[in-house]
Amino acid sequence: MILPLSYFMEKPFQNWTRESSSLIGTVMIYLDYSVPVAALRKQVEDIAAASALWDRRVVNVAVTDFRETVLEIRILVSASSAGRTFDLRCEVREKLIEFIQREYPKALPQLRMDMRDLKPREADRPLAAE
Image 1 (cartoon, rainbow, N blue to C red):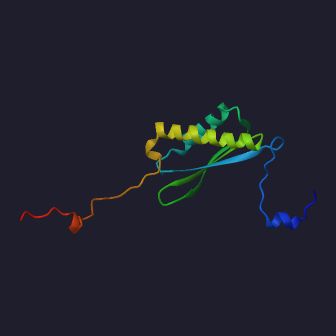
Image 2 (cartoon, one colour):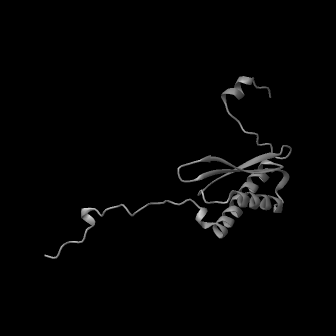
Image 3 (cartoon, rainbow, N blue to C red):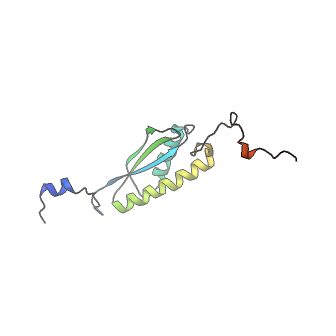
């Protein structure tokens, strides 16, 4: 099959080669600023090293952005095929969230409010005895 180059310029595509091309999978996670990134990086490396799906080429953890309440962390892992890459991404997500829940639960995204300066609304005040 021959397709003009303009076809690929106008229609985005993704390489889903099943067996011959190794792929890099991305896992994005959003965590509180309190997360120790070095400990997270070590855990991702350990998860990848223990996985039969990882092809031993790429494992990387990087803080890619800051948001108002969270850090954006990108994890890259490689595998030998699209199917294995998908499964490896799922494995990394599942094992990493277990690690964070167990070791650093306060690093999960939280909503913080300072209630000290809030005054009760009129409707919230107790009714005076009649």
